[in-house]
Image (cartoon, rainbow over all chains, first blue to last red; front, side):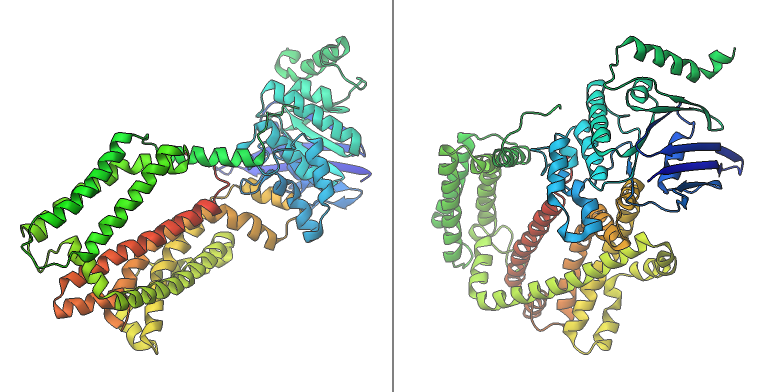
Length: 252
Length: 339
């Protein structure tokens, strides 16, 4: 993948009364290879909707989403998607879950060493034969991440994968994601409502506003790696993003 | 990494098994109850031998039944007292039931055979039923095998039809649109209503019986399967799509395992209906089988034989039930235990 491009996208739904709702309005976004984009905004701003359009799970009513000028019409293994609750198959063990995509694509003779590698990398060793309900939330999310990344997607879409985790586990999974991003150089797009998370991971931060969902601003992250969540630069940049998010207050 | 301390896999599964046994068999081991259960069975034996009978009964089979029961209880008691394993958990839990069962055996023996408070030919002692089973053993074994075979083949056919229809109806709207009305109308008809027709339409009565039993099975299975498929979270379908699953793989890896809990509910509902239909259809059309045996015994007015067949059915159907239960436990081992 060289270029993901979202052009003049509108997502329009109708409520029960037949009223038109603009979930997304005039979205333009262009993402280059190897970037880490954090999309941040309050709930209801359509950030998950945008991610679903990019994955091909949904299609926009107006505008188009393309990768290297190819129109996205349906989900594909080249675009991984990690759901908010992981949605590991509860009837498969951690190992079976992680290999499920590989098995689907390559048949029985998939690369088992690759699976071992990611089990190791994600710190899941010893839990391969456990079922999802038997492991912690953090482990389940790491397994869900492994299940997508093992397919070597050119674009990985992360839909608030840390949303349901406690603060310690969240930091842990963030580090795992960052490590994978650096090692594999996969382009990633993360949807979150956690400012720290967006700043810690993103190379660019997309700030969205709700009703209708619009992109307010796209900010380049000036912080270098490794990033320190408590450094002055981090806190300064955090304040800058915070100000952009306080729409009501800022405009008074 | 926040990794927990892990037990080795072998240790873990052993610990899980022990834990499972303890939540299911929760009554603690009490030596007194185990002794009491042994005493109750001894008492049943002594009572049967010493109290004079009013009815003419051959107690030979009953005697050996009590001896076998006693040996079983002693074995469980001895092992349980020495080894702290699953047998102790199991034996401790059932000691009270075993003690009461011993007393019940004494009670029924006194009421029927010994004092004839409730009388022949409609009420018979357990000793007499066992004796009847012993006398008719060749015929009964033959009948049991025949019934089991008929049930098995019909139940498998009915379940397969139900599952396949249910999966397709749950997954494909178009298919559901055209077939659901038929399912609703045809499925609701009691299988027994077809009996007179099937006996005429099918070339052999065996095929008619298979049809009737399978007919009782397919509807509950299909109905529950549809619900099972429709209750699968869309997240799983969407994950499958982003992971590159084909439609066939979605069916095999998402739809079937996702619907499996409901399929089993359907299978257990169908099981009771299938037993009913098995007995009824054998009573009408067959020349062998437990249902036929009951009908034949009724004809000659030997109610002890009816009881004998009922006892065998109780055992046979319990065995089938626990087998299906084990199968379910294995197939749904991925589910969180809820207790």
